[in-house]
Amino acid sequence: MLLQELWLHKLQWDEPLPSQLSSRWLIIRKELTSLRKISIPRWYNTWSSSTVEFHGFSDASQLAMAAVVFITVHGSNGTTISLVCSKTKVAPLKRLTIPRLELTAALLLSRLMQYVQATLKLNVTATHLWTDSVVTLTWIKSHASRWKDFVRNRVSQIQELTANAHWKYVPGTSNPADCASRGLSTAQLQSHSLWWTGPPWILTPEAWPSQPALSDELSAHEARPGIALHAAASQPDYHWDLIYRFISLLGKRRRKTLDLHSALEEARFFWIKATQAAYFTHEIKMLTANSRLPTAHAFSRLTAYIDAQGIIRVGGRLNQSALAQDSKHQAILPRHSQLSTLIISHAHLRTLHGGTQLTLAHVRQSYWIIGGRAPDCTRWEFNPPGAPHMGGKWEAVVKSVKFHLRRTIGETLLTTEELTTLLTQIEAILNSRPLEPLSDDPEDVSALTP
Image (cartoon, rainbow, N blue to C red; front, side):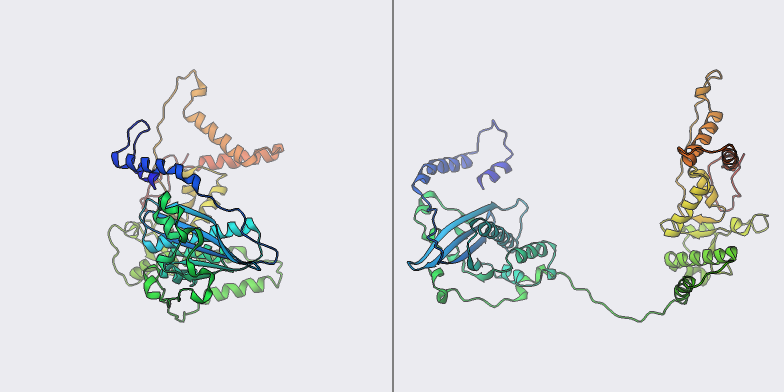
């Protein structure tokens, strides 16, 4: 405790101590010489025929926590009680309530008792653990899940470490651990019978303190808030039932031919509508009721509408253009959905691991992912004509060709026909890449390409 208080003063190693701390240290140093008068017997008077019991006590104050373990031996020569060991710990700097400190002291006792039993390896008939905190007893004797995280974690450890022990209440005046948590001088320690032999009634079970009734009211402030659940019947989704039936039937039968285009289109429309229904519930209600969305909403800028198939699409003035329907009115998708991730991944593979602009241009042919593009800026610094290694546009194109080749081939050896086919595909990709940053304006047509 003195060292903790010294640390709180934030003194440097060469600074003198304040007078208050200095006087306390001088008293402690003077009393250190008296410790030679204290001796602790190493033998606990145990025989093979002896009956051994352990008694542990825990206590806490605002300054420290303490745990002490006694051993009682019942043999032919009578009954003896001895101090086995003790352990103290300073209270944390972050102030805790007394019940929480008492619970931490109980955990300290549980660990100390486990250590003593594992070290002595005696045949113990009973283990009794005592605390003067009724709140701590209530916590320990209840299920750990009832309490908040701080209490729950420590109670679960205590219950695991002391599964075969009996927790009991002891008055504070009869608790030997109180001597360690509050401190004793050397003179007091030499003749303090409560510390060396425990409370006088410990050898007489009939004289043990009566146990108080445990009430949850004392520890209600650490109870975990309850969750009220209400069961309600939900309307089954016909589409999901149809999907499960289709998957089940598909695994039982084999077909030689399959209309892939129509089946894939139906599946694509279904997942688009399912994703929109999951992420745009409020927007669908507003659009269905012909209500106006806020001006700052992304749907207002996109002039979104619901088509005949129930898909939310981008509006605009491209109805009379020669573009495909998906390119004129892209399906709107949320940014963080799994479907959007799969669509972007597919476009990334189709463009042979192309960059952001190329991938986004491919996605915008059929879909409009909200927030799918982060604005970026490209600055060119051209080189002298006689330094091709510092080239501008042409070196960038060469770099792009190598980029796609490296991502696609890796270390694979290709034939002449395979390499020619791959270069032709890369040429088509480079000639279809956008030459300018893509616009977020839904009424802009496809970006200018080579």
